[in-house]
Image (cartoon, rainbow, N blue to C red; front, side, top):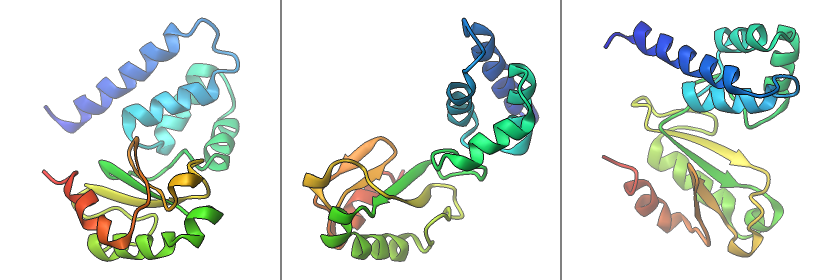
Length: 159
């Protein structure tokens, strides 16, 4: 299937979601979450589509996307690896874990591996201070992570 057909299907899926909403007013963040889930990120064309379908100014959509750190305008890897850098995690060695991740994947925070498999990001707090330092991969939480654990964690996501 060619790439443009896949993109058209994604826009169709997003449009169906928007049309299924009982009330579009106040649904911007919910729609952006769905859009990012469908596309993997929120490029300008997707943001303009959302603005048009919700009948809100594009500037409002751009403002929300740029304000909330959850949203991204650049493609992410198949597996998003987040390192918590909140106080508890930082004090217990999160910086060393992050350094090891960057070394193992040969990328820096905010970058994606050339094969599109991994993106590294940092969070301010995961809310699991008792497990510090914490790493999440997609929706999975890893606690008490040490630099020695990094290779094993990444291996779980290799094909």
